[in-house]
Length: 186
Image 1 (tube, helix red, strand yellow):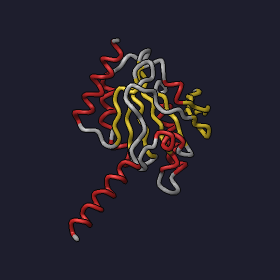
Image 2 (cartoon, helix red, strand yellow):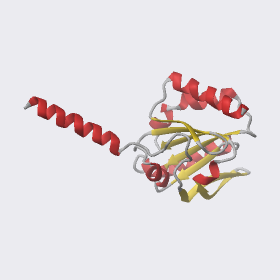
Image 3 (tube, one colour):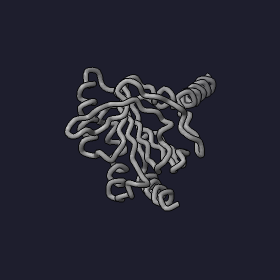
């Protein structure tokens, strides 16, 4: 009896992980999605304007795409990667960080804080691309986990060269920096 219960539990855990697995594939473009509500933040002097954003616009530069739930605890998970990117000083004509904030996956009653934080971040880093997704369109299109951080590295053609969900290890962070350097030099 214990063996049957154990097998059923393991099977359920496996199926649960499969059901929540993202659908992003190496050497493919990211699944197509449009963010219509809010969308891309555009720095306009000391204020921020918004425009619709489409994942098809990601080609043209090497990118680290960071999708995260609108929660400070999730943002902190991969802050070491963001710090390493800043320290690397990549050529902005060939590289851009794209941050997609899922405001639909924020703690209740913090939506205004998430939006304000995104706007301040854009004004502090006008060269970075910031997308505010109020309805979880990207999370749903890419089948990402809730309350989580997702990282993808894209080559200049918009093809995925690295993908991970969750907190990156120090080794993964270093691999990403090395990969971006290699992709920029191609």
